[in-house]
Length: 68
Image 1 (cartoon, rainbow, N blue to C red):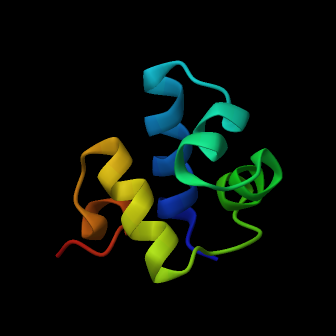
Image 2: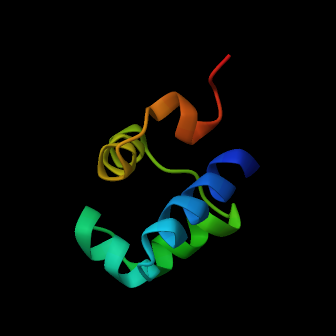
């Protein structure tokens, strides 16, 4: 799985000081789904990844760790 995405997602969420349940509600996911992303157990669909990048006001390539 993408360790960079997992780490950056958790860092962004913690920087805002919001629990995974709140993040999930704000982007239309369950807290369990957010937790799986943060643990690297699942990778998001493109739609979900874009929604998360938009929420955190960062680029998708940075969040996914694909910036060259």
